[in-house]
Image: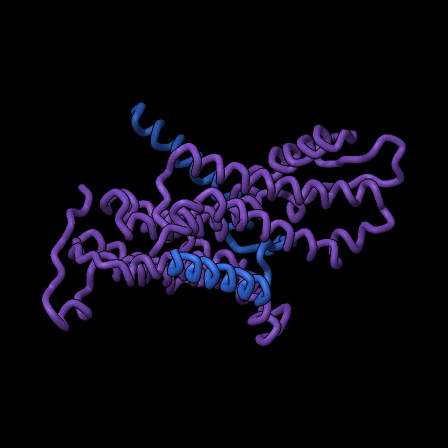
Length: 284
Length: 59
């Protein structure tokens, strides 16, 4: 059963009412921050507090922007659907998960409340749009890592196979090398395109849902283009190591990695904005 | 009886999945080149949002 449109309470009471939108906004935030807490604690341990703040606690800026977009949808948009009993049970489960010292449990709860809100909220409603954003966020905070851990070998071999096909280099398993070249590159979990792809999908979901872009052929092609751009830059980076092994350290860890990060970020953002240009640049 | 076997198989599948995924579930860090890392990336995205808002208000 989905929400029907609900009337706003009169006067000052409107700002005090606990609506489904507001409840789920709080639940999404609590679950997402707890799911990200593992990375944040590691960042503080590695970089110190100031360094961790500057590194955004090793959480992508795209994810922070997506959180802001999702929260804006649940708090700003007028929708006064009342809270249901099952919502309160879910709120208790999210609070319980937040008490556990295992961030992944909150990641799972973020997925559960996101799915529940997306299914029960009305089509195109702010709550459903916010839920889709937070589902994408749970993908990058938890499921991308799980996918990579469970299917490490096939995922890395697929990355390597794509590289060998497009860059015309030799490949065996997750090792790629140039014919007659001096070095071979081992595609490890850190080099996989999966991480970048999950963040690119968060960017796409955040822009499309915030600006209410309908899920049609244009939108799906936009997501596909953003994913392909992420993979292309990653492959160019590893291809650069094979072509110029003497630059390997700079390309892999130094400013080469920084340049490839910025190129990917600009490309993904530009592609998502271009795909959604009709809605994004429509007069507010 | 077959229901018990079915349930046991499903339980085994879930347990296997959790066992294999446990490093990721436990939050074991992997070296990840982060897309959109750091405050400069956040400022760039914030700037892009500001420009979009400005363009929308102009129509």
